[in-house]
Length: 114
Image (cartoon, rainbow, N blue to C red; front, side):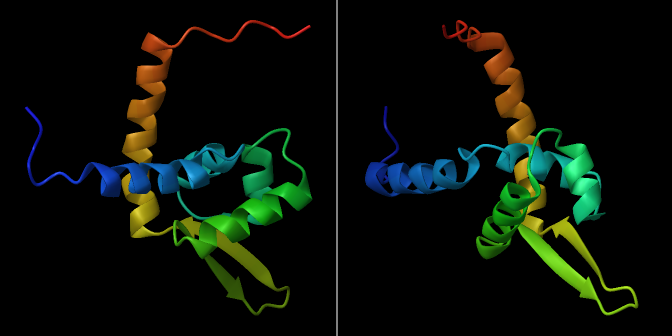
């Protein structure tokens, strides 16, 4: 039986919003990399093999804009920038872990494209 307090349209909108952020390539891997603590740009790049500097920069900006990560600039010299999960980003880590376990158990790998 459906929960009368559950507004299906609100839930659908929230899930759509979540996947508009999390569904972008690399975002989950970036969040996972930052799950171990704050990292500098180059450290994030090493933790996410295959991502270009330009795409990483874009994704970090997007994740900061939606407040899943924070960006801290230390004036230096040399100037350094570190990225860390916000409390909201930290709450997402176990959700992504659960999603990964679910996917492994329930989704067949895609067939190679020719």
